[in-house]
Image: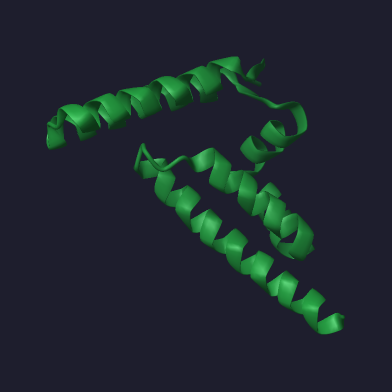
Length: 127
């Protein structure tokens, strides 16, 4: 029983760390969604390592964003605006570089879906 709990803990730490890595890459690659990976990271860390979860929640870049999303299902207005602008700039650059109709349609659908998701979230006041 103890060995299986320890194995589960290590697997969750590994999955959370891989998810964190993919989330960080997703900041720069528009078709790789950052938020779900960071939420998965939080889910894994909270179940496996208090130290890692505390680090994530208190991280100067990710912490407040994850906390607000998990606690309030909301993001700051400035975060919404910046995310949508960065999303569409990144998607546009990708479309211009690749120049494939199928990829352009796919990227537009991803952009529309992510934009709708962001706009549907509650908005926290910027402080």
